[in-house]
Image (cartoon, rainbow, N blue to C red; front, side):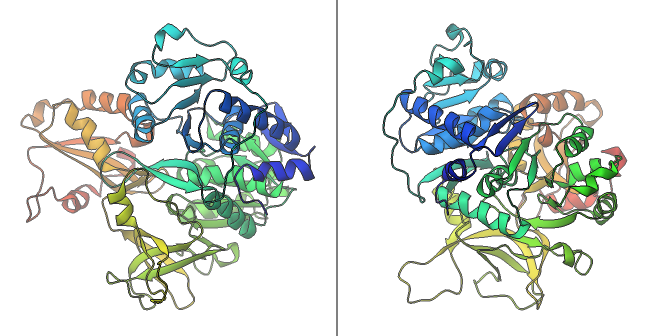
Length: 529
């Protein structure tokens, strides 16, 4: 079995060289063709001075250069950092500086949008664009700019560095309850074990065609690629503009596996599905939020022969549980049981195990537990802690992820989600930090106090509402604040509504009472937001 990320590709290039690995638009690449591109790109990365364990950011939509970059960075012993294509310049700057990115791979149009922030990215020394013609380098005096062919010409036959499975392979950025997004550090072992686990319970084989519609910066999205490569399947890349594009791709490519999040499933449920899709779509899966039962029922009626898997996961441990399709009718509210090669516990605050049906914190153990948060020992110590209830005789205690999610477990080991223990928002499959939104509002100078809250929403999971206090409620400029949010925040973080009050409620400690605000505004109709 492969131990390293790039070995997912190279082993299949040896055994099934002519099998199609990647399809994007009208083009396809076999496993051998992809492996040859990856090897040349790995050599080129060494030629532009990529050192072992140094970070390379990829700011691109899903295309062949995105895939080859992940794998070549791995082969050259670097660490890839996928940046969600929907993020704005200030958010990209945070990621580039937070993990000291030295090489950036992007496109000319995206590079132009980053021109202002690149001046304050001191570690970034090289920028590679996927077009052959490089942009005017005078606009980026601090960096060396290369077009794609010029970059590949830096390849030279030198020995690739040694890589072991506990080395860093990737850093995925995810929001926390406070502050800017945190970089979750994944080892090669984490990524490969995740691919093996998911491929096992989804029964993925060489005959499968998986449609990748989710961002690769999202662990759930990245796994569509890695599990496909592991099993020698075909991964079809799609950045859709309209939900109808997903239906067309399912039909055109005879897709056998589709992974999505609740907002997309909701949109797909409202569309007509050609009957022929039922002949080849073997399975569907959901993660990133609870799947509304009405939407699940509608989707399953459109493709009655397809199996639906409900899943739960967190970036810090990739995936934790899944509910087998045959259990959906018996346990429609369950998160399922632990995925293969993972152990899930429900514990009390003192670390002791909860009794059946007793609420507690979900704790994840096993090879999928990430290496921690990049350069953040405090947050790492908060969520990556010794596993509970283990042998006291072991001098080194196993580290587990303490999720912060409150769950319960029944007598048969099935888990049920209850809620979060912090103020994290969950919308459109993304975790969102309320603090990150609040800081943008505060920067406007138009509000005294700010609270970003989430209220229940049928398809989004939570809709984001911002409540501010101001002395001039009657003359409050909501439009100006909304425009600021749209310019500074990714679309999924932009609040659905901004509400002005003269004062925000406080708890006995003098802090903003978020629970009171959620209670006050939870009855906002979905049609209003």
